[in-house]
Image (cartoon, rainbow, N blue to C red; front, side, top):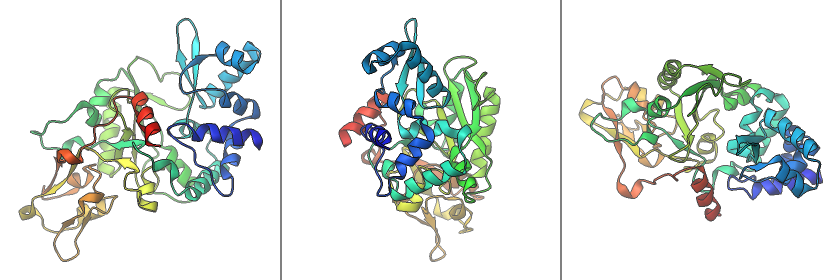
Length: 349
């Protein structure tokens, strides 16, 4: 397992982190995912894209052999493939968000159990550093029309501005189902999109769809009570997760371990018009984060728990709830892109 120790240390030095455990379950999980030659290759790679030739030269390996290994790693979702100047480049993926999500088609009972053990032994350790891995995207219909909202805060704008769209099964829900846990929400709910045409036509994981179907799935997940979240940065967002606190590997950090900053809240929070509220309790059942309660026949808001998703607004039969922008002292502008996010998270260590 020495090779996987090295890989684990490499991954833990990345901004996304990969904390160690008392049992060493992380080494078994890495051995499940990476063949030895792939683990050795990953130990010598970086987050910044490089050519196969550069990686092979640094490792003292044959270029063709290295290129073949990297191609297999791309197919397994272990590294990112980019088109450089006249050649392809390859970049190491972190654990989450990264190569774990790339194991969707290979997720089986063993992998599900290894991840669950790792998650609980680390007590959601990858979720604790700031900035958070994910950021909540509010339901657009929950924000009053007169309130200004930035493009990165609008799920529909993210989809409208793309040129190709796809949908895939939720790996979190699939992992929980293999353990006999989770919920009955639909499995095919995670949206992906790209700024180029036909990006998902040949994908073995994503089902290519139209923009209209992507918008329809977005609305259906809202109505089903699933929370929108995505990468915690403003530009370069390529996916929208639609999940819940009983399955989501990120939002479970709030439910299981009280890590309130496991996911960055949106710039909005819930507001109540008391005169319209009938204390019916529908919104209480709708909220994943225990923000709403009716202890003494009066609806009470615990705003420190509100992530600003807006799902409760859609459920209110009396239109007594809406989202309002948080105060300036409560708003954290997300990093501009994934590179700035990595810098900020690295400094936070």
